[in-house]
Amino acid sequence: MTPSDGLRVAIMTDETGWHTARLKRAFRARGVEARCVDLADCRIDTTWAPYGLALPGFGHALPDAVFVRGIAGGTFEQVTLRLGILHALRECGVPVYNDARAIERSVDKSMTSFLLNRYGVPTPPTWAGESTAYAQRVLMREAALGRQVVLKPLFGSQGKGLRRLGASARTAASATSMLKPLPSLRTYQHVAYLQRYVDGGRRGFDWRVLVVGGRAVAAMRRVGGKGWIHNFAQGAACEPAALDDTLADSAVRATEALGLDYAGVDLIPDPDDAARPLVLEVNGVAAWRGLQSVTSLDIADALVADLLDRKLAASRAASIAPAPLVGGGHAGG
Ligand SMILES: Nc1ncnc2c1ncn2[C@@H]1O[C@H](COP(=O)(O)OP(=O)(O)O)[C@@H](O)[C@H]1O
Ligand SMILES: [Mg+2]
Image 1 (cartoon, rainbow, N blue to C red):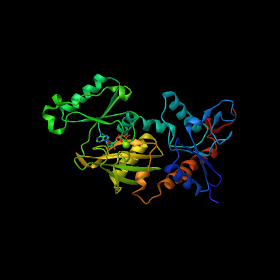
Image 2: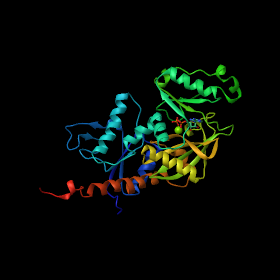
Image 3: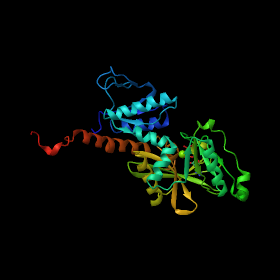
């Protein structure tokens, strides 16, 4: 028997495969029954006592904890409802890993940039707004300084939809006359999210660091891919990387800034300061297949251990702690 024997966990996902198999195995090894649930199949139902929340396979009960592995895209309303289910679970006292509030912050790249900057985590200058004229002005200003910018979909992932704009270093002298124009924002849902391009040179790479429960536990270098876009999904090769203090510290602080339990943090060397990696992006629903191929750490096991031993344990301790006394502890008047 282990302390987690008999627990039931929901893995929220719209597709089963390598990641969910790994997670299920890690939960099973701890005597926990894990079941995959599609958020799209969950319902808010105020007649469904006692919680008003129905998850397939759980009857009128709720899981002891939830692991969020995937949230399918959809209409604004569909995604709102799916995230709402995660918010509702938290309101019912179920530990959700990662919490919906933190997932929302990390999915929205502009909020990520805002929070990183507020928290003092080094990240490239970033601009987000709805006006094409504003985006054009940012582009012109950066180009006049001989810089390029990256236009990204606000909710993008896997290196899809990224465009590098502006004059290349070679044409910087005549930068503004050689500008690659801003594409129509229609394909970007009418939002311009622009980040200063960080030039990695011909042998460019970036880092992916996995942070679990406040600790950086694994890192890799992603080399190659699609030109300057080094995502695993774009064909980058994964190489093991040493987790030095600056890399670990930046990744941990980025994860804290967003309030995530665990995160896959993308970083790039700062060409102006070798001791200071820049955080490009923080993933709150991070895949780890590429990283698993270069580390001996069992990542699914590390995530499951953190959820059960830290997050769930803290939530149980809080629920049995005596309620704080109000008004100095005097019961009567
Ligand atoms: N500002 C930038 N400067 C240089 N390279 C970048 C920049 N932003 C993104 N990239 C490259 O593109 C990849 C994908 O960008 P990222 O912001 O992580 O979006 P996604 O959510 O699609 O992974 C990064 O891992 C990096 O290789
Ligand atoms: Mg990324």
